[in-house]
Length: 560
Image (cartoon, rainbow, N blue to C red; front, side):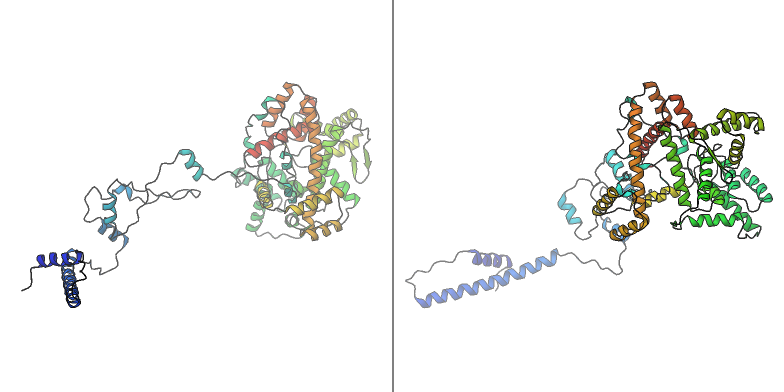
């Protein structure tokens, strides 16, 4: 009979675990071999007995497998996991929150469950069969850190020497703010904040109102193809953009099925817009066209804040020149207005050509503009009689014919002062942002600077050759040299303005600070203020530009 399982287990365990006895050397060899064989036989029997008992125990401990008939979804898997757990462990409804729609600059923020503190071993054993990923509890973030991560970081516009590669048709004077933050720093109120005027804020493009459309329709009934001067006057009267008026008249002609011929002003205006993208030719300009252009610029210079596209088309209707050349001559006229104010006005007699008309000095033009504005806005009788013209000619020591000629020409010009029309600001900002990304390597900048020191105004052939060597276009090289020359000239003017400003009393400094907080004024108004303060016109304008450039850098946008 076999022994019981319990006795057999103890017997087998004792046989396997006890130490083997050491045989004495006096035992015979046959007896020794017989004992060894008996012990090996007992050990084999003990191993077989233990193997049978362990198999029976494993069968009792093993769990039945869960039959999976169909693939489970995430919801069924999640529900089956919490099916047999107590209510304390069940997830709350607050934890099952879908992400809400957030602004574009923010990331989706999930509401994560807070895990209760439990035994780690129990948690691991319960998660062994179904491994559902649980997030780590979210740590509390301070408000400063939260705002820093969600709100996009402000990155200033880096201004470097490569900004000279931008289009030089519109000089916005943004180079003057480079390194000039301590230019006028001797007064205590320099660091005070400037309240930007509401006029500086960019407004979206608006559709014509009902009153505007009524007046535009009246003009359209009389003139189907209005000129640039008529549309510019309408834009200034209603405070709208020149391009808005042009588009409105184009749409009216399409609705009425009115065809345009080649000689119509509307076709010329379309050509003017197309010539903006064409390169300028290097052909010499006739003296007659140059004098006519100078007359037009002198007529409008004192009443304009900037060269708008409507005013440009008005000049192009009279003078067939490229827009970039006209803008360059306008900048030259502004520059002469600044530089001539510093030096003593020389006694230059006005000269008159029978075909081109008279030409006056800046001082005479200033007095004529003041008299014209006084008559237009502050007098009951708006019409100019012959007695008024003669009295003005005697006061200025001029001929009555030349004064009459200038007044008639000024009447044909745009209004300029009734409304502050800001045009094409979006296009200008887009051009500045697009040109901002153009950067040159340092070795190219060093070569351009060396060429500039050797020759500040190279010719077309030299610019083309230099551009081929550096991999640039002739236009980029020309713009670089133009901006570099303008920057050096303005730097000298700012040094002179700084010396004059620091020598002023405190009351005049405070008034200049107040003027810098207001919206920009016209040239004639600034000249009148400069004469009241007893300073040069360029000093006043330089200080206002400096203060506005500092505020523009602060807001990361140039408000001009």
